[in-house]
Amino acid sequence: MAGSRKSDHALRGHARAFAQIAAIAIACSVWSIPAHPAVADEALLPDDADAADSAQEIDPTLMGAAPVGCEPDAAQLKASIDAYLDKYFADSGISGLAVAVVDSRGVRYERVMGDVGSTDDTFIIGSLSKSMTSAAVQQLVDKGLVDLDAPASLYAPELGVPDSVTVRSLLNQTNGFGYYESLAGARAGKSAGEFSYANANYDLLGRIVEDVSGMGLGEYLRANVFGPLGMRDASLDGQAPCAPATAGHRNWFGLAVADGFSHERGDDAWGGPASGYVRASIDDMASYLRMYLNSGGGVVTPAGIHRMVFDRVPDPGGDTFYGMGWSTYRWGDSEPVMSHDGDVENYVARMLIVPGRDLGVVLLADENDAVEGNSTFWQIGDDVVSLAVGGEATGTDGAAARRTHALFDAAYLLAVVACAAPLLLRRRSRAYDRFERRVRTAWGIFLHGVVPAAIVLYPLTFGMRLRDFAAFYPEQAAVGVVCAALLLVGGARRLRRCRWGCRP
Image (cartoon, rainbow, N blue to C red; front, side, top):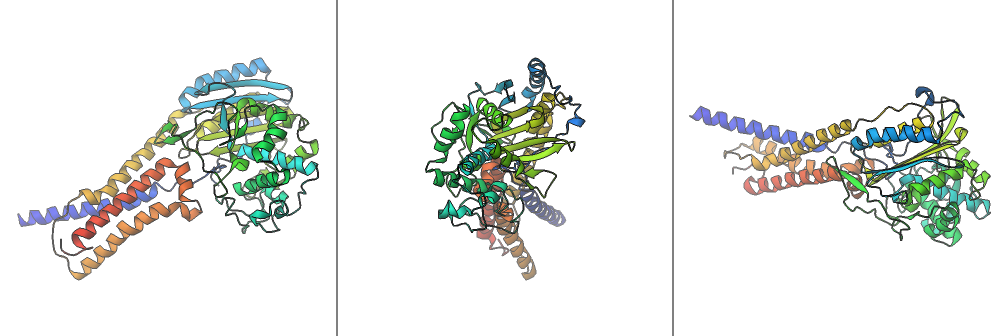
């Protein structure tokens, strides 16, 4: 009987140790997804972040695209994209989707699906907003009110940025501002002089538009961009909407939930209206892309459009360039392409222009699945572009996204169980010598103090604030908080009962 009791005690001890080790490994690992996007936007970095904000290079030579000038006509385009969406959208898991294909003469294809009621319903378009802010700046430049090479502080002195930060460097994102920095906290960093994506650049440009024009950014865009282009539904998020808004969704444990999330506002926010929070409908975006295909359409001068596309800097992380609100690259080292992705807490978007084919494509969705990476949406975007240029579609695999979430959900469950184990496993009383007490004290401090702190503070290790992490990764943040709380409660209980290793 004595041997049996010792064996039972040993087994319990091993079980506790295993549970505690599992608590550390699993609870920390579920926080290991790189944070975006950017996603606030785009952002993308993970875009996007920016898987969220990095333009994906689709080479038409790999898609069997038609020669330039031989793209599908409107009827062929409608048939091919309708057949594709009818086949794949229902399985995609996306709550609502809007798609448009345009040329300089008008809309060649347009469709809304899911919970999007009409082509006037609005979405937050994420970093697609940056090009609109850039368009506003180009107007002020052409009027002689802004000098691209003048210090930004000349136009917005209240923000106290150094004179090395010029209007041009803001547009090209070469100030070295940190990816996760807000406008209020933006500081020129070590990467100054080369492209480094940061929402703060465009939030500062929005302030310049306001200070120079004497108008609020929303008012200015309505009078000088939205209105002249016929973008009757567009507005800044948070201002009085001009049209019904689609309900944004965040993904919770594999389910798209319209949880009523609203992005914070103000200079302390990670991203503002100028960098990522314009609301627009698919009708609006179709009109907006046609502006570029018509050399500015009288809203921005041809010189201003040229600057937005060709006054650019290389992206040191790839083969693309970043201009003034657009990423640019070439298909097969020949056809120039303009592109930008958008990725905010509960919406994603993509726009793309192929000037040589007189073609523009835009897709908007009212859901962000940051944990899974929105891979289904990006694939649908790639496929629609391919079909628009007469190529083939790859198709999507909605089941792959569901499997990814199932694996994460299992990890979350294991993490919670592991962190609860020290509370659930009952220990037998016995005496410990001095060495054992010290070991148990150190282990208890590590498990119930260091590990919870590491879980909660993990986002700070890559510069992301906790509230922004929770906004983009709500399920992960919730699981982390639960795990940390369980470990803390377990530590408090252990401290009360045995003072970190004394005889119970």
